[in-house]
Length: 328
Image 1 (cartoon, rainbow, N blue to C red):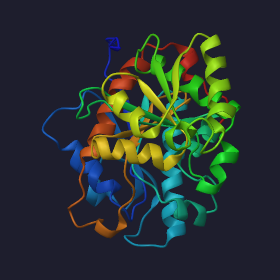
Image 2 (cartoon, one colour):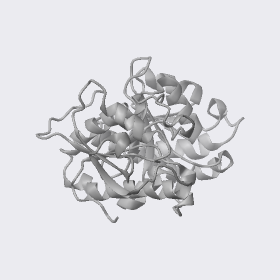
Image 3 (spheres, one colour):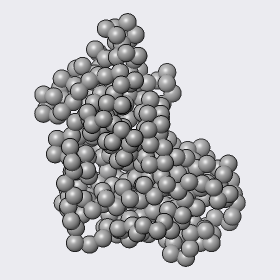
């Protein structure tokens, strides 16, 4: 289903947080901005003082990075940049946010309990619920692949307990809403990926399909949503890339991440659903082992910038309700 592209009267303005200063965030941001193709947006870079030599002088500074430091300092500076970006969005100074990678352990060392950006942004904006969507608008089979995680950063042993009817309903409704709000899909088609092998094969390999998926899908269809499944993981992603679905609801982190990174590594983008503004990030981590070597691939960051610009153009026409903040 093709999205309808609106035409705003002004260029969107995007805040770019530079992530953990020890990682590749600053360098991939700079390299992505230097690509020959122009980006249809105005950018504001946010990071600690001390990175100006890496990213140039046009930097909104939060704290200071002395050139090296411990995880706690890196985590604090990472948080301050994100908090500033959210404040700018709340005040109408930017239309979208792109976040470079942060370290979850550094965030914890700085005293923050969030496991990642998604949960942090939920609390900073007061969003009732958020979900992580991995989006690749181009794939080898010709159609987009968008994967929405029903459960996120959990140990695998905790997934069956967390994978409930209510959780699947909440994530499906978020996906339906934001595929319309940001992508312009009037009736997005969702496919539910099964938790168990072969979608449990009539109960031989678990009961989550009949106990969780089927009741949730029935309720969603009763609400008018276009939802298929549950379909086995070994077919649902391929079928989506062949045009059978606008998004796949993946039951846990690694099945969704593996599928999209295999299909579109370098072109996949993280998008947080449920926020008052579009937020994207590259689909990779801090890569401390290669930071500063000049070998980091900026393609995912460039894709995140382009996606943010596209979604922000739609945000400009979404109306005041889509940009409401409940608290900061």
